[in-house]
Image (tube, rainbow, N blue to C red; front, side):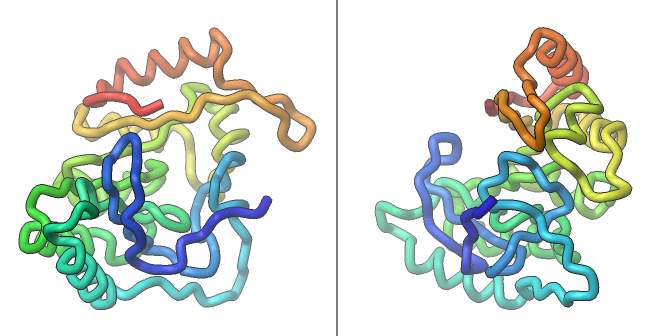
Length: 221
């Protein structure tokens, strides 16, 4: 499946129904997807397995320069961002300097765009790392994915890398004590000869059960 990739560490702004004028940050490679999920609906395409290949991620220092320059450029214009959004070509929280980068972004935002909120679009796979969790608690819009409440469907839809367990993802979401936003994509369709539908009564009941337990600020569908 061909996908759409962002070719800069700072991109946009783009206009989002959810986030308004959103300036994007891509902490992943600029020429390929890098993610520990392989969601069957991903706009970036399939996750490639690249054994032995060195992955080049943007450096913290580069982001500081690029984000500062862009926010100064946009300040006072109609494109001044409502949000600064970590998204890009995969899962942003896998970057080894993610926590420090969040601190940098907060400092730069406060200096050049104090009204902008910081958002992270995440698949909730790295919530076993305390530094990641603490960083996510510092931002205004901590947006975590939950596409299903059923373990089997989780593996069918999200196709996580080895070692990522559904119950651990749920545990990570629960640990926020409601200080998060959930996002869910509901769909039905065929994939690899199997019909996948997370809109059935069984699916919705299981999903709602988890949503009630997680108790997010709200849900984006």
